[in-house]
Length: 243
Ligand code: SF4
Ligand code: SF4
Image (cartoon, rainbow, N blue to C red; front, side, top):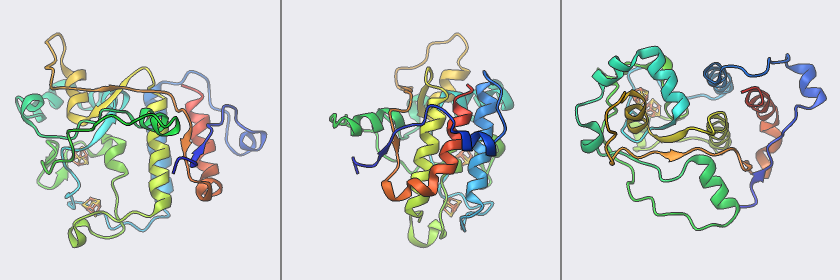
């Protein structure tokens, strides 16, 4: 596992430049984020998933995301609508998974063999507050944590999702880049991030915890997936270089 790190490319190769158009510098990070989402959707076209509309067992209170993803959601849906959808007292009352490390902080700890901190909150079975009548009310702007929750077999059959190893690696790489383009931001449970972003002047409750984002220390790609993912990593690298 710890031999699975792949240094991030810092410059686009000549071959890469020939295939992909030049992207202007200093693009709006939210635009880049949406482009990353589209790139992921394109990757998934090759995966035969069982996920369908109204299949929503995976819509729990365990979804995590970055600040930038929350900014996209609040910009499109509006702070007031988000606040209306979140149950009153959600921060104090809703059991949910609250990560203590961001994805890149976790990768860095693994890479350097640092001890991992306790992660006491665990997974919960509560239903996401944005799920209404088995459909997501914010589907078009849902975070990557929802987009990458896929299964090749209906989760209701086995009680869990089935995802092949290559797609798991792909998901990790996308999570790393999505955090990287928001490295001055933070990550956390969807509920916590949105409360942080939608609370104007009021005090944010102590229970509403988030964790700082980090740049990519190395990509977590096992050697046998490197060739298969080199193309998409090149495209992600080019997108991230222009934020
Ligand atoms: S991940 Fe599972 S529960 Fe979620 S949409 Fe896919 S099959 Fe349904
Ligand atoms: S945001 Fe939407 S897609 Fe994501 S868990 Fe909630 S209801 Fe499901």
